Length: 135
Ligand code: HEC
Image (cartoon, rainbow, N blue to C red; front, side, top):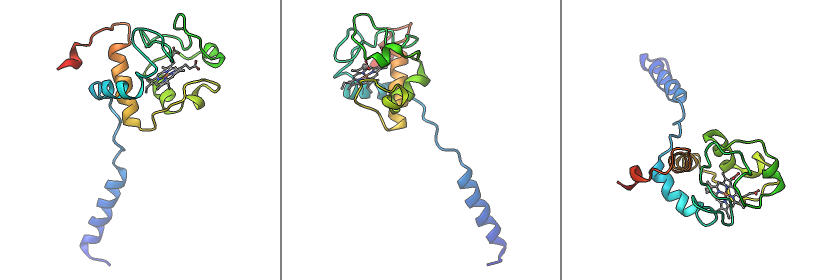
């Protein structure tokens, strides 16, 4: 086909292929619900449970919540918890820190981003500020 339109079709197809994949922006309100559903069985923002407390998690070195009995892998890890290390951990804890004991992962990138956005609000040095999530 050699009509004037064939070039247009080619250009349109090219443009579509070049659109960047939607970047996962975290939604803290969605993350709050995901945290309740996927994390709270083992973790709390106040105390150690099956998993270590997430109080002041952001900026904390891995394996250092007082009073929690970590795996050797987490105790020896040099990771500091920030948004990028948390995203990697949640995608696949065992690949990120082999020998660790957390048995779940969050395969969905958007859900990971949402959970980390929530943790940044409630588990950072400036926490607690639950008010913005209540509306
Ligand atoms: C089935 C229980 C369980 C669930 C559910 C769970 N975790 Fe964990 N988590 C653990 C355990 C156990 C550890 C400690 C691992 C170790 O010592 O190797 C841990 C460790 C962690 C750590 C490292 C903390 C530190 O002090 O170094 C982070 C961060 C974490 N979990 C985040 C999450 C998030 C976010 C969720 C929800 C998406 C979640 N976990 C769901 C059991 C769980």
